Amino acid sequence: MSSSFDRYQKRRLISSYFSVVLSIGLVLFLLGLLGMLVINAKKVSDHFKEQVVVTIYLKDSAKDVEIKQLEKSLALSEYVKSTEFVSKEQAAESMKAENGEDFMEFLGYNPLQNSIDVHVKADYVNETQLQAISEEALTKSFVDEVRYDNDLVTLMNNNVKRISFWILVISALFTVIAVLLINSSIRLSVYSKRFTIKTMQMVGATKQFIRRPFVWKSVRLGVIGAILAMIGMAIVFYYVNKTFPELNLLNNTVLIVALFAGIFMLGIVITWISTFIATQRFLNLKTDQLYY
Image 1 (spheres, rainbow, N blue to C red):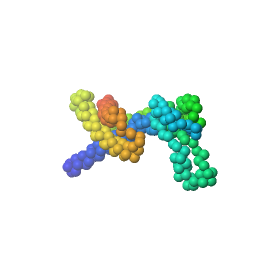
Image 2: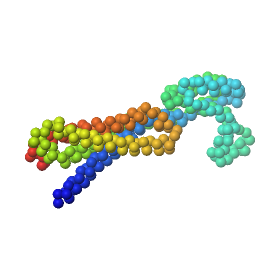
Image 3: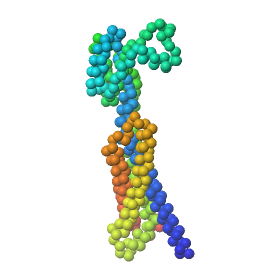
Image 4: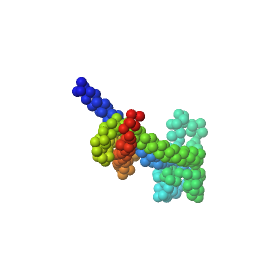
């Protein structure tokens, strides 16, 4: 009978430890993914901003030397990421591929213009900077027109600001929820040992002596949970980076390592503090209060 009861108690203990590790691991995993989003939010927004194209249309009278000089000066500009010369023939072929018909057969000539597509660096993708870039290009006598989607730029910048704000709010909220969930799991684990704590206290054990094994046990569980969370994060990072290689999510090694180290330390710190507070609470309770 005693052996059966011991096995039952052991199974309960293992189940309790497993639930604590699982809850810690899941919460830290989700917190790590949110951390990845925060770290890469600017990189993702910059990637989409740099897809905006400023098209410089050239007059038919523009000489090859003038065009090459303009391309070279643009390439050396601090605000330009890349440039591409698009001849009127290339533009016609692209339009033909998009529309599925050759408009030149109806017109008898090519009405399109040679142009230079300019991809601007993310920091310069705003109304003021793009307007200045446009005005600078128009000072060239062989430049006919400069076009870019101003409405798209405005919408994109407004959305980036709005999304960044909500990411910060959600991050703060989720961090609080993570601490509360882990703290709740630890408290339930310590609660099951409240009578053991009180018995040890009644035979003269000091609070520090009673608290130490609980703290170390919880810290070990926190470490295991953090390791599981980091394994999950590494898998997600790998597949996201493989799916979206253009974002280069894993290029910033220092921040990635700092994120993993932060998750690991968070698993230790939260479990340590939660266990300390939980054991302190039961140490301060009177014997008759343990039943409530």
